[in-house]
Image 1 (cartoon, helix red, strand yellow):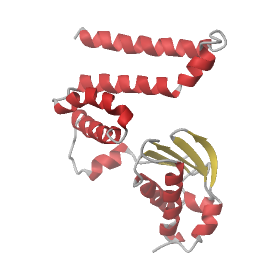
Image 2 (cartoon, one colour):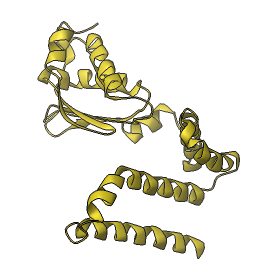
Image 3 (cartoon, one colour):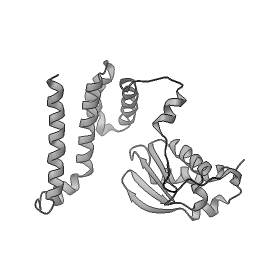
Length: 217
């Protein structure tokens, strides 16, 4: 049974409060912050390719969505959100989330859904890396990176190798995201942005120390 609320009226009350590459935050009307409505919206958004995190902050009437820009864009996220408005449950059991509660897909719920499947970190990482390879294959400029990563997928990955790879991937991603700031502002005014440089040096120190501790085992 669907809600009697007008989806068009609800959609006009949804506003974009914050937007940056790969992240958008919406302001929601109170009707969309009930537990059944929040679950419906969260489930619908997770069906969108590229969306990897959805969180509804009921007390603040906010919806936060993180997505991969190579797989989808803000318009796709918005279309999926507005489509979900026509599938909202009836208001009879619409219990508003408690103040401060946030609805997100918890890891514990995912584990229960597998009924004790108990996939280990290596198996989960292999699946994630395969999905990443499929996404990279759609972009010719990433074929060189894909060719270097492919042998890892074809071999039996160890937990240490997976963690090292993901750390490197995160480092490259952070460099890419902050590249304009690094070249146009941080390098030109190093003293003004000294705290940014201290953060970079500290993260590099942690990464090097982790690598050295792994080699010594």
